[in-house]
Image (cartoon, rainbow, N blue to C red):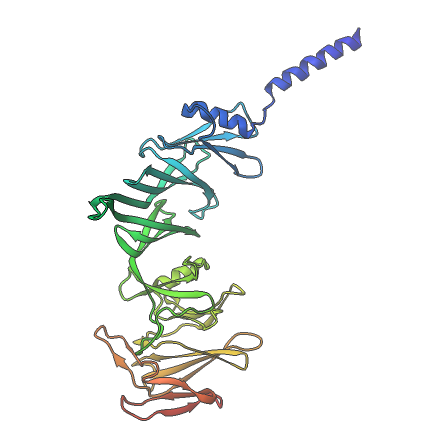
Length: 416
């Protein structure tokens, strides 16, 4: 009797525990639940995205793949009894969701939800939009923090062909944008408000917790060779350097792209430094980037392959101008040089900076006071022109002019 008593008690306990134990949710079940929420005839119009919030929380994210008022439902995969989390997009027009991504775009350690909407009205209008939600897994805290049109394209019949009477379509593109994300920044490039080759950059402000616009400029390729017949935006080791007009007065801002037109991700301190860098240059093989960290008045070198930064010149004084950088590789050793203009601290008002790669250890830096001719523009920036006022000669010799029409002077770098 006692054995039967314990057996009945055990069966009762196990059945009671099983009723309360959480059940896992399958993808098919998540689709069926979302189908009811969307009031669709079948599950063909439902998309499912699986995401791991952390090691303990597995989510099934359902969204509409068909054109309707968009919404997103998040189901806990490890607990079928838990109600879904709902993210509404009712404030948007009818659209279909083409992509969902979870990324830490604010660079704060938490995943944000990136929603790509497609507004499809056949030939008359095609539109796409990016919408970003913060705290998507928390129904109380979730909020929309960013949205931007990625495509706005109108098309209509403008006239008819006189010979066959066929309609001739007129197309207008206001937006055709490619987004990129890196370390709390959103880069938007393309046709924006009808302006081609336009660049917008937004940076996450942790203080006010929103994306602030930091760049809004047309893009043009940086003139690495300003002399006559020079080449614009020369490809260097599958990289290209572009200059964009900086927001801060007196600054030059740069971005670096690969051959596919994608912005190359670099450490955040370098990205920020390039927003205001008086001198910025890629080595001919694209291995190194020479730039100026303006807040610290330092020249720095970045090794793309090793992902390593090196201070070339610490505590650089105030300058009136800097020349173009010349790179050269000889006997397997890379070197670069440039001329700086400083009226107060240089005895000759100009100085030659020569930087040379070493087999081991940091680069070797030499500074030579030389009376090199320079010209000043209307903004007061002064610098000598490469190939007109200075250049590299054969056998590691530096050639320069003392005056505009002076003969070339030779300065041997090998002996110094």
